[in-house]
Length: 338
Image (cartoon, rainbow, N blue to C red; front, side, top):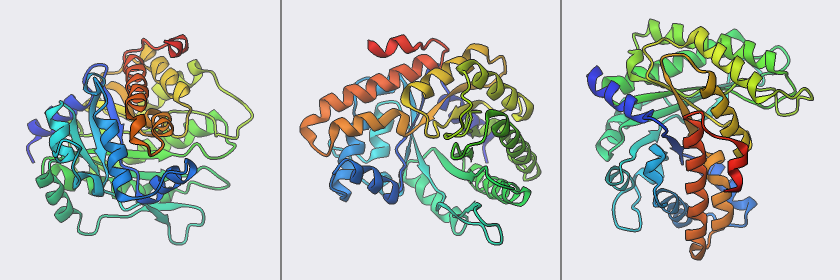
């Protein structure tokens, strides 16, 4: 492990006014989104769609890194380059999703544990040889009746820590993603309570496994009410509780926080991020690592028809720009009409 290399990459991943594009959807998730838009689910369409996204005009002005899927890191863009080589050429750091998905957690109904540690060292070495500079592992925490359990949070934290250790050993920056899902009717205070506990357990576990905090990026959820909660919260309240939660738990050595969008609308994801940045007085950078909130409208415009590429690219470029402004606390909803 070379902490100087890790820290340099991590700092570049949260460069001023830039964020991370997540295009690491599994085949299942990609199929669900393509099916909803009547797009043929083929390997070539997945390649063509992601090629359209990364080749959008001026994308590297707003995007520092891109998280790829196993299939994509082995594919080529329309100019004949591999995806990692193309991203390198345009100044975007290539990364890779490495977990094997959230599976039922034994003896704990309605809870999940993320798998994928088997042979991870060998896989990470291969991904490194293919050009990956960082990786991502997602844990899924559900709020419901009598859940999450301490066991679920501890088991997922340990898996995240083991993954992070393997990454750092071969100089790949781990994105650590402990997602507390928006699914449910819980209020914002319950989200704060669970997220605060999860982050506390996570950083305690990372510390016990000797993870170097200056060589990781945290990808958390924002503190929001459940998607079906009747009590809505203002962007200001979301920002206040989110910053408080991070301040309670995130060591100052961590270079940055890159939020997941977690099912928020495009505008809410940008507006909430901007409000967080307006009040954040902590030492780490705060930016975005969005998938759906960056690319869904572009996918709809593209629709599997390459004649729509230019118009679809205008949409992804605009969303990247809007979130770049949000990462500086300069976004306003009125800008959406630009």
